[in-house]
Length: 211
Ligand SMILES: [Ca+2]
Image 1 (cartoon, helix red, strand yellow):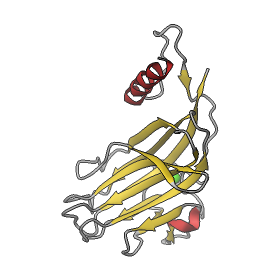
Image 2 (tube, rainbow, N blue to C red; image 1 turned 45 degrees about the vertical axis):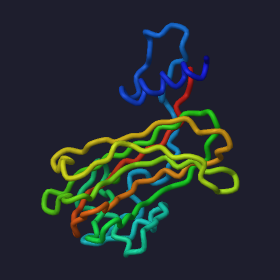
Image 3 (cartoon, rainbow, N blue to C red; image 1 turned 45 degrees about the horizontal axis):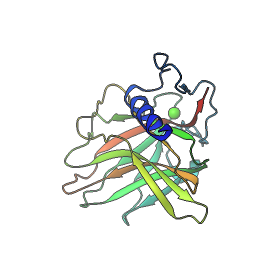
Image 4 (cartoon, protein in one colour; image 1 turned 120 degrees about the vertical axis):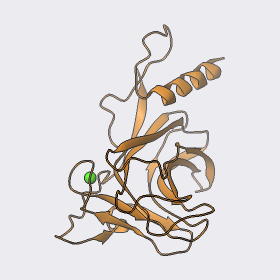
């Protein structure tokens, strides 16, 4: 019974964002007030790029992965949600390609975690075809094996190029999980177009406390 109540709360929570449910007497209240940031370099401000410069994202504390093609993710000083830098993802035209970056953070089973990022389309090289981006929370056990995965909604060709849009995914760490890979991934799917660009900035992972 307690389990079903909690699931209902999490659904509401995911739909409405981080609001306090004062109307539900006797139910645990969720809040991220003062929750410490679990990511390092969440705003991609390190290392500071030289004028007209660029750097691979793996120089900035994030791990990268690809489907085999070249890594086309770099730190970028030409767009930022805050500070001066963001990450620039450039697409391949290779069907079903993917590339992404992640950080692993320790988690406690049963605790709820909230992962978000701001993304923006590039007005001069916007996303086209089937290219999308997405967040995932991948739960891993103490032996490293994945024990579950949650996805955010995806962004694609309709993503705004004038305003930053926040995407998020929230969920409870499952039994036997020890860490979460917090992933920002780009996927080509069936009909990707090469050289499409989106930017990502101000990622955040926090444990949602119960007050
Ligand atoms: Ca930034």
